[in-house]
Length: 481
Image (cartoon, rainbow, N blue to C red; front, top):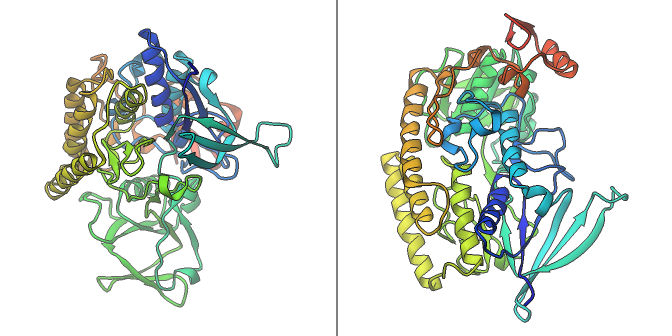
């Protein structure tokens, strides 16, 4: 009998989780389908890659100096701890370079990419035949000698899993007069280096995690002032420095091209506007009948158990939710999808799936009213892992949920120093060491500096000096003047 084929779109953390789920089943003696993972970037890691141009025709949404904004222990791989990867416990709030290295380390240990991933290959279209019951995936392979055009080809698959994430297509709202603004105007997607705004008055539109983090970064790297304008609710941080303020929503940009007017009647002259207004779920390669249509929510309507497209339960989407859990949730979802594809789990009727989603949407609404969405997502994880042999356990979920409460308290105490608090691994039991440099003074986001491995590379040294950094107590501790 011909082996079934599964197409996986995207080799970021979600796609890698799916590959690992199948590989885990194989380790236990199961015969798995043929897996082909299409990745448009030059390497795995998805969002955590940073470059001016990380893909075939677009850059990612990562910016220099981005550190995780929640304890890394919440999203530690249960089958591959940080301590195993780095050979020792490391701080709880690493920069993007450390997270990327960790993600790649798990993929390398289990040989996921070399077996299953086709790099620099962008999916152009997907079709499904009711006659053959197969997907046709058409891609353009840019790894060939003809880089500008690439090689266009198609292959057929029995199953399709979309793991492209939803943090790449900017949501760009309109405001009166915004197009006439004379300063720097960009979406957070296009932010690369916050030192571009040193000495400037910055307006951030939006009050989510992106606005919160960019405000901290702008303050850290010397912006003159930061104003955060929100639609419904402020960030929830009550301890901002004096130079950071929050005001109701932007209403218009004055005809002078600099003055921004807000809903409460106040105004502010600014040099730069950064739209921290989120992203759209965008799948242009998918036909309309197979395309997920949703917003940024903890519960994604239209997906049974958060992963199965209810209208066409032959298609799966991973990682489409707003996230307290990310890597951990991707694993839980991946093991569930794997077992559905392998016939270990039977899906209920479409009506039952929709009723199930309605139940979870109501639970989400209740959680939002109580402002307790972390517990909501923890309960979702527990339901998912109850179906499979996923290594994530209810005990792990309980321990990491408690971390969220402590994280909130640390942020409430001091938004600029919460990243200096260490946490205990729910996997190994080891307590993270306190990082060698307070976050506010650390302006070298390299893996070498974070792990105290030695002197930065000449290229990194040039970047640091250009940004006004000087060595302090040794070559690996870099502080702003």
